[in-house]
Length: 315
Image 1: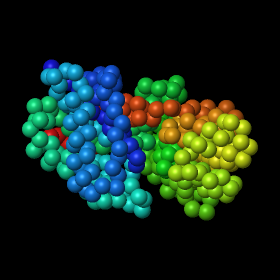
Image 2 (image 1 turned 180 degrees about the vertical axis):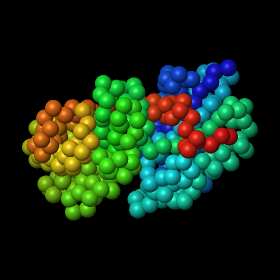
Image 3 (image 1 turned 90 degrees about the vertical axis):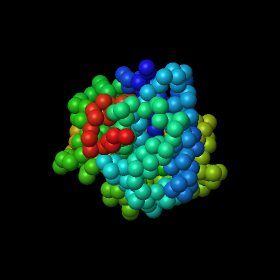
């Protein structure tokens, strides 16, 4: 009987998923991308999660499949130990505020006959911050394994972060912000999240007189790579803001590298020069990761192997 886990990277627009074998490797042919349905009602969203889980288990060719765990990389604010979402103030997942997603899932899975034969006795559900899982997965399997001390960023609809030293998350120390999260730290006239994010780039584009149809950053990046000087200036200014934001954390934590994920990291070639105009650490390595989800899946595998009782619940 094949033993597998399911990993999910939950974003505001899409949910990405893959099956993991017992060694934590992605099973070929099981990578799936689904709409997030982040504006659904609580019941609608929970039914969507269960439907995705069923679809993902059906991707496995092994008909004797046995699931030993499911892990979710979820944005915050979120009580990861309890499985409760506290996301508010955005247009994503608002209707999940205060909902115990773990218990809602377990209730639905207990009533699902098709799923009943596909769980192990030690089946459990775990949750963790998406940036933390990206960091753990990348440190164990990617570029970050080359370094002992790394700062991680995920730049998309917001700014996720994590600080890792010798493979361990640093969340409660004087040289990192609380929980290792920078998104709500003071920066500019407000907080980091308003500047180091998709909306931060869109605001710079608007100030430069560039209309972005549908808020698609890729169009802006294509224009910049085609030689549009104004578009290139937007990314360069974004890089300057990023370098300015990084400066205090780099000085305090002293990372050997900054590893970036998220959609905006794919445009590193356009804003890296701007970073080092305000960040005076020329030896610091800036490493982009093109598929953040694969790193998050590796992080889920690590979390399930750890069996961290604070973040798991047996079926």
